[in-house]
Image 1: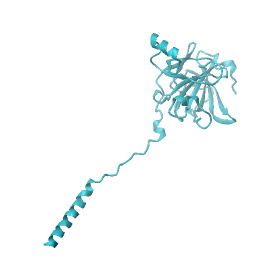
Image 2: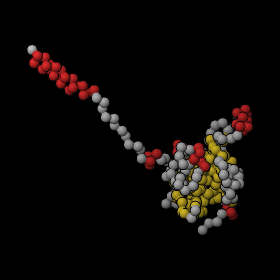
Image 3: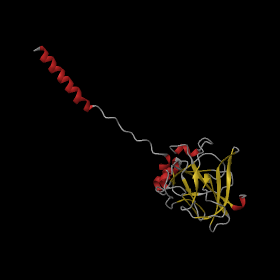
Image 4: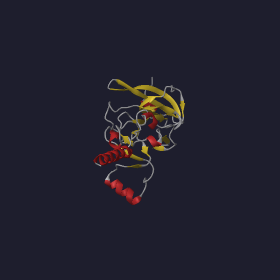
Length: 234
């Protein structure tokens, strides 16, 4: 009788062990992070004016979905003051109260005015985006210069100069980007449709003021407008 009882207990234990293993937590399958290239835009931006200089309209040079932030700062290289489109996010208390009471600029693009530099506070436009993001021409015009961008004696991408159609007295300059291999001096470009380069990573080169308002190091393409006579071309 005792042997039968022991056999029964052993059989029950064996059955519980066999069927109980089916309730163990199954291993969780994880998916590897998407490669950075999948996060880059697949096409040009939609036409959208981001700033103006007199009658010249500067279109957003980065696809809207990839812009991390937009900022303006002073520049001591003779750049002309731009008129931002949209409203300033980090404006002072009095300006915020006036906008709240009287309206205006409550919709559309949001931008920051950044510290540093000399000259007009809106002379340089920084459009933030991850390194490698495609950059498109902000104006219709012709490429008049592609020169190395030198910082502390080292070469970081290029400065691309565009003479806008119908505005021979000024030049639109882009920096913090690597030029597209197909781009040459004399090439015609069209705003928002002609790719001119890709954003260069400046994270280890300089402190970028835009980083205060972006989730990354503040990488960007910089756009400015200069009198044509003030620039020299090779």
